[in-house]
Length: 430
Image (cartoon, rainbow, N blue to C red):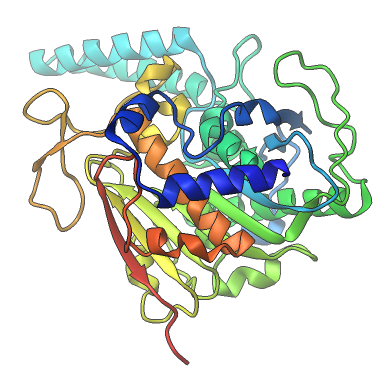
């Protein structure tokens, strides 16, 4: 049995079959769901970087500022003779440079400013504000200063990339640090630029897969050693079965790219068949997405929730759409680099603390204002995201309908916290 078939069968068993309480407890140490023992060792990873300013925004967008063209790729070690659907992940709006000295000095200046504000010392407030802004420029600059590492938000979805690769997908997580650094004051065009970046990346992958040529040829390196890796993706990646995942503003980006009126901007030979938004923020123009199946996932304690993609498109959708609400979930835990356990510069728990440890205050529309809810741990939130994203893409990129009861909310996922509220809208009859 091939890796893809083995992983798919295991995922199906884990998603649809009951398990014992003992097995459930034993499995909580892993974010992988349904991957057979050792499957992670059968997933390979490479990286590529064509330059920190290699992507030039299309002139018609009007966006100012260049972006990197890079990615981390997770793929089945044995690509075999078949083709694998491609899933592209775009991260959201976050700091760009892991400058610990700037973070330390900025935090100290914030404390000093607050003390000066309380004391009514306006001159000192102004002095500390200047320091805060200077340090922000270092944390959000692009490219980063010499000797300062980039903040690698694109690697924050490794848990998801490896799971999906084990199930037979080629997964590419791309960077948007350049977009983030140039974003202020360009809110009206930033999501067009995020969509254009996805299209450029897909164009390069289409060229590599069909001809073995293009900018990606010979660009892959080992993530640890940085040494060249020769991986032959030619004929093994199916760009007519593309899925996208976007987190935060990346979620707004993938919804923008999938909008009905934007489909003619997809590169030749590319068909986006499924979109999954992790806490996707509102992308300003509200363009309809009625022809591409999509799912959105939110946490009730998300301090940054702003999108209403399910509500905006329900009733007009020609394809299935889904909404998953995680009781006690926050915004940042979907990305490991943004989460406190990483120790990364800028990492945090964005949820408002509840009245006792282990609880958060609900921020989600429809809930009682600031109601205490049991907070999901980082691991729990990622396990839920991994399980539903796996089922979603197996269904919509591989046509495996046995996942419908899970996706539609008819059956609960075993081995997960009982924290998911499901809304499902079948295609509207025409």
